[in-house]
Image (cartoon, rainbow, N blue to C red; front, top):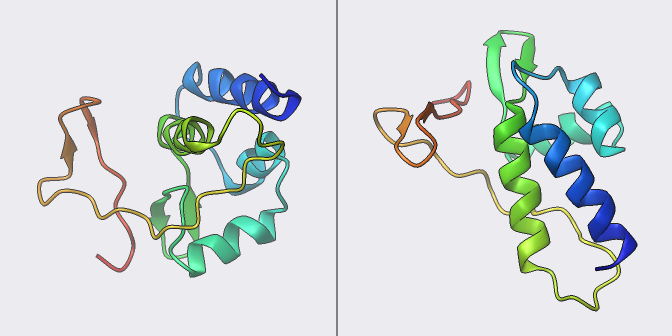
Length: 112
């Protein structure tokens, strides 16, 4: 396993062990992103998914972020040195908002 994949695996495990929501600055620090990068990804509706708390506040579910990272890890070839972020649009939550796979409420967007 490459060093990059080991780093992402470590982040993935840390996220899976967390409870509660993460602020954009907290998630940016964990992922090694700038807070502006997360904001730009939200404006383009790219993953990781976020939760709208109020008109000017968002948060991230660590479990959803870990799923996003795991998807990037599992799709990367073993000899690939870096794992680019998933740039696909975020998936819409089900109509009920309940995810039967995880037993949790799905992330809702402010525009839905």
